[in-house]
Image (cartoon, rainbow, N blue to C red; front, side, top):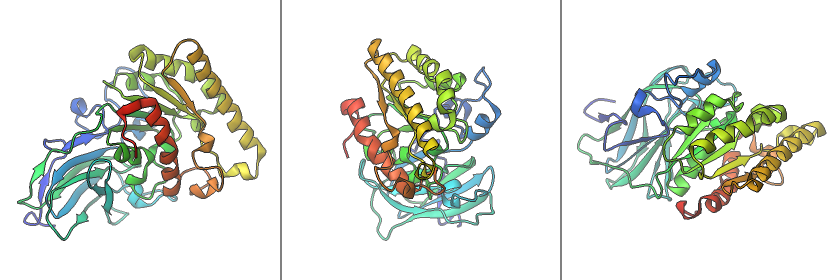
Length: 351
């Protein structure tokens, strides 16, 4: 790709809009947690925070082609997740609430850098574009390529610009979507035309109090979703769920909080102990929310995650019995959407 073919733009510069990185304005890096927070995060959390799950670039353009030039922090190295999901960008175009997939980056999966066209349209017309960041890899640099004479305009406004902040596990982070746009938080973001901040940390969603403190400093939150049972299990939840919620509540007394128990795993077909463990953790989270509601918190809610993948064939929604395929993430988004619409009221757009 030559400079004559594309003019390259920094996504952090107006009129483009960068979302999903709450501390980018301060730190100027594609990181999901703050640098120099004052309290250390655990080392694996620090590393996973460099993964760019949930990051988005939004703008409008009449360029018939859209390309990206990307420098990653590493190459594809996962044995159960495609390179397009771990390391790729994908592109959606269309009016708010009605965006549709256009293309995904194609590249040498052994490389840590690439250039790729993600939209190639036959006609020149003004379109709203969303580019979704990689789910399980860091991005050192990304540039967006447009036709040299193309218009570049701000994106359409959000229906509500208060972000929904989702904290959780490897499933939350996007394991194992085939491309970034199929992550459930990205699906919900485009269905509802509002920003989501994805704070899923693979294997490390353990309810750390410093994570709650960092999340609590994100300004003007529209809502919180806590879906970290799969990493904490029952004993971890007993130690962390109340304190985690209390930290969020101290900073944002009325912001809606949705606690979601984990989805069913395929192992439940064979091992009743797996089902029993999920049900015990489910009951604890449900009872915790009920107790807080009884104490006067009218803006905290519980969702049985056992229903997220459907009532039958839920194991068909996973790649390895645990982590979601695109079908799994689509079902999760469909299950979460009406609940979030109810909790957040008219601040979300019905699909």
